[in-house]
Image (cartoon, rainbow, N blue to C red; front, side, top):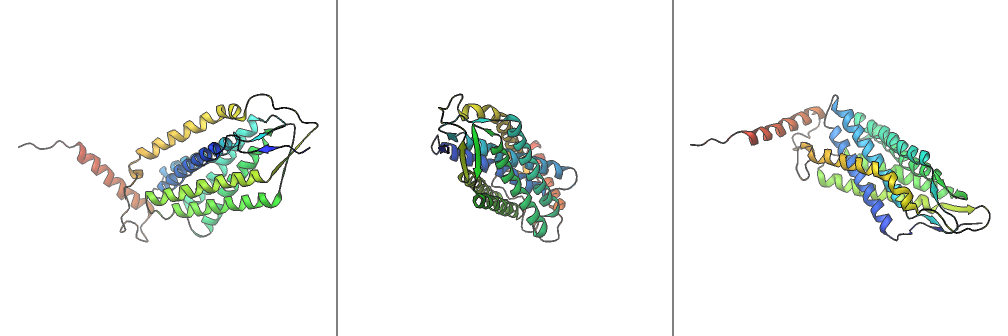
Length: 283
């Protein structure tokens, strides 16, 4: 028996909030990746790790906020916690591999293609592993062509976003890349959901138990708190202040190492702070 699936039980609320979380995770991940491209030594892996965790958490949070609106009329929907959190780990690890490739090899050529492909596969894999954690009295079937299209979209979106962050063109440029990535990742989710058909076992039964929102909300608290903390780190970093250009055209000229650009900008930021602390002279 085929189940009646509704992916929009709360109307446009869940898609819009899910897209917002994907954009937030993408913005933090891409900004931290861009920051990492400007430093060398021990700071670079730290920024790349923060980027990986932020982007992976944002994508995972987007998925399960969207899943709050997923119901099957004839069967209650539940989630296996182990598989659900495994999908979070997969998202962070695979997006992290792609981000580290770009962070150390640059956002161009083979490194960009490899990093974007791995990151995109991480986005798609997180979705389908998360769906594997869904429990109901039936089975899920997928349309192969739609699934393939969702994977291609994820890889293209990730590659484009990582290319954009490698351009280092300022805050507005990175926000545009983040919005594009967030919308595309949300599209990957709903394209994957469009491929789903639910086949129930036995006769129809009324839905019982807690709602998907009540089941998923407690699982989202940790990743949401982490995204807030990552946002605080980005906001208070002196080279991340929105609307400020820390890299003049001369500083961006070819042949200047990234760590030299970052060092110059760091020295300028410290000089500004020192000037602000100096007592004014009185006559």
